[in-house]
Structures are given as C-alpha cells and as structure tokens.
Image (cartoon, rainbow, N blue to C red):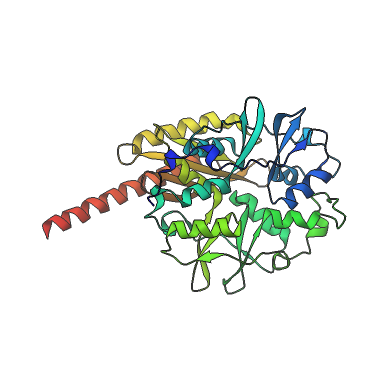
Length: 377
C-alpha cells in the first residue's frame, strides 16, 4: 500500500477524542496527579465547558507553584484548531504556540486534542520521510548528565538547553538512561497524591539522577527515520537517543519532529521560533529584524524553512549578563545546528547568523567543487 503525503492528512485523522481536562478553580494538587496518571504535560482548562487555556507542567515547575495554586493563575493561552486543518499546518501552529498539544474545537465545543506524539505517528507513515535516516534529523553531540549528578543539576541543564529530557551517562560517557522533566516532577508527588511544591530543591538536592532515570531507547547511526519514529510511538517517549559504541552521539526529540512536519507545509517564508525569553518579549522585534536580514542574504543559496532559537541568560556580577544561543535551522533538504555566546544578546545573535551564513556558503562551494570533479572525470 503506497504511503500518503503528510500534506494529505487532516487533524481529525490523528487527534485523540478522549480529552483529559481541568477546571479554572482546581488546585495544582489535583491537576498534577491527573497529568501524571495520563502521562501528559499539559491539560486544557474549561470554564462552563468553554476552553479558557492550558496549564503546563513546565509552568508549574518554573513558577514553583505551591499545591494550593489555582489553575486560573497558571493559565496560558492556547490556539484552538479545526479538525479539518491540515496536519502540516497544525504542526506549524504547535510550534508557534510553544505548546506540546493543540486543542481541537468544532461548533464551540472541545472535540479532541492533537499532541506531538500524534504528529510523530503521522510522520512515521508519510511518504516524505521514507528515505531519511536519523542522522539527517538528530542533534549531534548531545549534552548529557551523569547518573551521579542531582536532579536539581539535571533540571538546570534541561532548562539551559530548552529540552525536556537528556541522556544519562556513566563516568565513561556510556549511555545508561534518560531523565526528563516528568521524572523529576514525579519526585514531588506525595504517596497520597498531594504534590509537594515543585521548587523544593532542599529535598531534591540529594536525589541522584541515577535513582529516577528511565532505561534509554536508542538506535544506531544510519537507522531509517521511520523505524525510529515507530519506536518512539511504541514506547510512548519524546526523546530518542542515537547510540554508537554505547555512547550517545545524537538525540531526536518530539520538537525536532514537529519542526520536520512543519517543513512540509506548502507555504512561503521562514517560520521563526524563539524560546527562553518569556520575561523579555520586548526584544523579540529587534531579534526578528536581525534574523530577516540574515535570511535575505542566504535565501539565494538555500530555501529557509524553520529557525528554532533557544536563548539562555547567565547572570554575572554586577549588571552584566552572558547570553548563550543554540539554534536549529532547517531548509528543504538540510538541518544545521549552531551555538554562540556573547555578553551582548544582539552580538551573540549576529555571531550565530554569521556562522550559519559561512557554513551554508562553505557547503555550496563543496557541492560546486564535487560537481566539477565529477564532470571532469
């Protein structure tokens, strides 16, 4: 049976119709156990059967919300999509919203929810990825945590990377597990179901990663991408490790795969997603201007599709801050991974984009040289 193209799929073909919800006046102590038991990171909040937003596990953790915090104080706005929306368009909407799931509405009612896992299931059976390998999608040389580090240290690493899970290694950098935000959040669930405050670092500071990590699911380099996606769906995981000689050499996350799906949308222009600046939204416009100028310079060499940029601010002594930028840049045919540091945010962004432009030009020169050698022979 021939595979279908992703652009032929609709949201209603893959969305879940059984939606776990909460109400605006429910406390965190009731929401977290429900999220845990259903293995979800976000929960739609209803007020008189009307969707008013989402509450995310990351928001509870970031704000160190006490157990009696009401859902309405943690609400994040959420776009509501139609069941007839194309799946590639839905993937782009997921990216721009910054959420892991997308509420689906019809005739004023919540009729379903589309998660990153649903996108992965669709990708696994699509024509577009049939010839791809994990090497073409993975982030190489992933940052890891040691099984002997504390969960507080692991949480800091995940926040700096903008990731929800990281590989765990032993002192010889051999892969021994994976730890994620959800594994750490589980520490704060009391036996009777009442969560402790997620900011309880005093209790967590002595808990090692090795005591909460999960067994890793991995594939070797060169593996077909559809096979890796099937494994992710089968094991219900959001992070796949690419492993060679017992060492993690790459990582594929559900966010990477949603970005991949968004690349297949028939549209003009670049989709830009910036994370890590939730409290400094005033600098977005200036960053977008810098990015658009750089994209105009490279658009004659490649077709820009998606730029995912994660920003981390490290406070130093006095008023100075150091900025760390990590980026994934996708074209129709390639994925580039870059990082850059500077004491000035905009200089850091300029440096990263200069790096990207130089790399694209270098690869073009290599392709031209290869063609000349081929024709010369």
